[in-house]
Image (cartoon, rainbow, N blue to C red; front, top):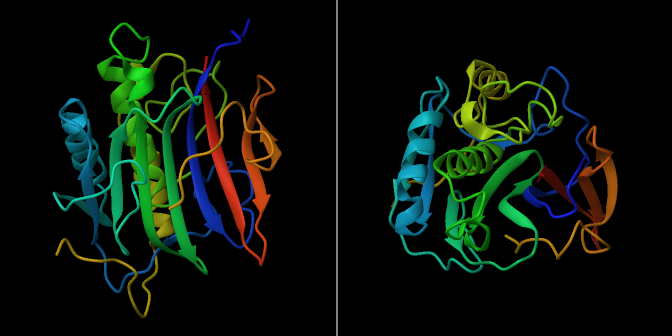
Amino acid sequence: MKTLARALLVATMLVVSVPGTADASHAWGPYHWARTSNPFTVVLVDGVSAEWDAYLSQASSDWSRSRVLDTTISSSSVNVRSCKPPKGQVSVCSAAYGNNGWLGLATISVSGTHITSGSVKVNDTYYASGSRYDTAAWRALVMCQEIGHTFGLDHQDEDFDNANLGTCMDFTDEPGTNQHPNRHDFQQLETIYDHLDASTTLASAEGPDGPGKGRGGHRWGRAVRFDTDGEPTVFVRELRGGGTIVRFVIWAR
């Protein structure tokens, strides 16, 4: 039985079309960083508290095992409330964002099919002492997954009842073996970045806020995909003047 009280992980992006459901592939539509060579480097701007530093460092190290990309952590200042990223970089922030239902939030902005910036928020409201989420395993999964979204990755699986796939890009109730990327994540990154671009959207080391409260509602748009529990996992909202906001959700039971 599902419990009524849930928290969630959310990934959002500003796009011009809605990506299809990931199957064997778990690319987040056609979206990727433009770059002129591989491997390329994504700058992660550190806006997290001391409690999250080790998890940010671990996620950066994990994802840098990819053959096509590296990450580096920058200590540039960032407003943790808005977590607005510098152009060409990804801001990673932690704060008590409130009892609004989400554990983590990833956002990417795109121009055409190219990612131009990204942000990750982890919601300290749900990691208070004594919370079921105040564990090393949950913190590692959330940080790893949300950063993975900013490279163009979707979830590998959205069924809570399936066996763990050994990747942070997998829905689970038990994050013990789902704290790091797995081989399929790295293979998917190689597929996403198997071409080069004429220019880059990346910046060297020299978004929008999170969703509304509850399980979506009108501020999240219409639900277009559901998990095996019947919960909506993808919402779409059309913007005035063109464009679309797509939000990917993983529910923790």
